[in-house]
Image (cartoon, rainbow, N blue to C red; front, top):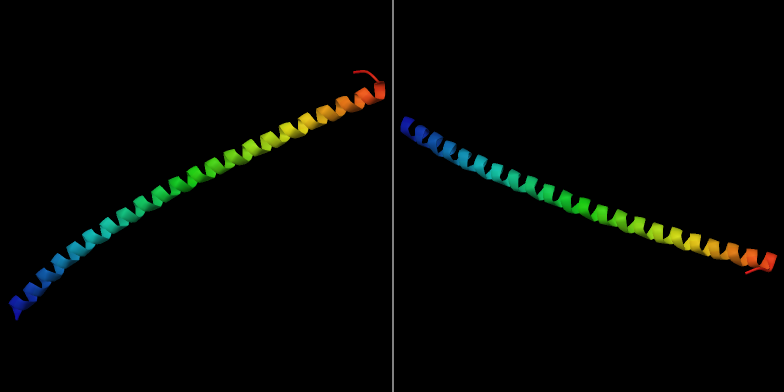
Length: 82
């Protein structure tokens, strides 16, 4: 019975080591996947913010140009000069 108990203990230790190695590999793969997903999300946010900024800049320039044209048209009408 003592030999059977020893054999069972050895088998359990071997499986425990294999399970620990498998768990460690899985945790590393998960960490790598999370880091990669975080980087992709960061890049997407970066591109989105730049697109919004470019749109706001274009809208601001359009408003400024329209205001300038309106100012000059009003000035021309009021003064009668070109």
